[in-house]
Amino acid sequence: MPPRNHKQWMKAPKVEHISSEIYSSHDIYKQEQENIFSKVWVPMCHISEMYGMGDYRTIQIAGHNVVAVNTGTGDVKAVKAYRNDQYLQPAGTMSTLPSGEPLHCEVKHGNMVWVTLNENPDCSVEEWTAGAFDCIADAIDTEELEVFHYHKAIIDTNYKLWHDTNSEFYHDFMHYFNRVSGFNDEYFARKNIPFDNGHVNVSSFTVNYEEYDGFEDRGELSFPNLPPNQWYMVDLFPGYNFNLRGSAYRSDIVTPLGPNKVMIEFRGYGLMKDTPEERASRIKAHNTIWGPFGRNLHEDLIGVAGQGTTMREGTERRNILHGRHENGTIHDEVGMRHYYEAWGRAMELDPSMRMAA
Ligand SMILES: [Fe+2]
Image (tube, rainbow, N blue to C red; front, side):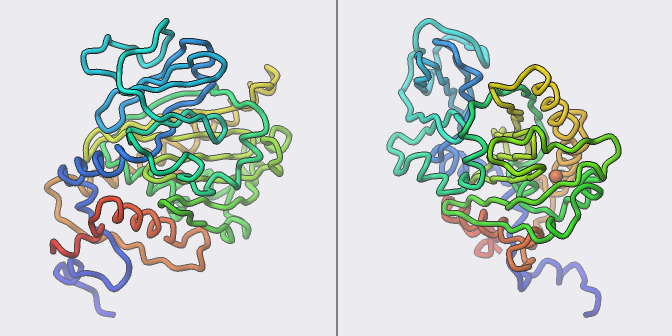
């Protein structure tokens, strides 16, 4: 094929694609808040962050202030706080429930606290997640979990780019750690498995930690019912990610702050019953990969920030290809296609924006 010129690149390609406009448009951002974030179940925090009676956590969903409170014995209530409500810290303890509109709330999947702004949700959390957590259920639901790590990142990029980076694995070539510890036959045979409602999970493989200088085998401290050194990932529509890597478990929760800005909250989990020595090993295993100074996570953040700069408002619209078909294996873009189909249905909009061309 002869080299293509600019005009040809701008034509609709013959493979699946989406438009960069859906990452940069203010109107689309506003519509996402309405059509997606105001409707879905959001895993806002973990029960271990609010174990005592009156303990609360807050989150903003689609611009609304949401407070979840432990009313005692593990029962959690959530409200959409009124605008004139007293100022609340992100977390703390209160004596009475704040005034506001009651929200549907459930504690599910490793005891995450799930809320939805939807006044009449048409499904439970179990139905919404549609089996995407089945692959790790025995590992996260057998023992009580506890959050041992929290940090957040505010990145000048679109929230979907964060979810994309957790869904496509060809960017693994960017991570030195993954190149040396992960690229074995099992890695390339992993499958992307789509579930209803736009969710995907990525099946497990064995990570060869000892290939990386200074890293240790994690088999001894694996999560319950998890074979040594396995790695599973659950990508939940529209932007929540659960990542189980041997001895450490991580969740990423996105809060879009604009078309070009996202807050991502990262949590690391261990088992409540960990001894101090076990906990120290888990924290080390988590932070050396996924802490702010770890081997891996900051590379993803730099990656998505760079992608974001190329598709800001005012940049020329271009086509982003999702055309890799490799029998559903790790670098097949089936996860991306599945996500954007769900996105298109929720938004009632073709993500390739063909109609507007
Ligand atoms: Fe990555």
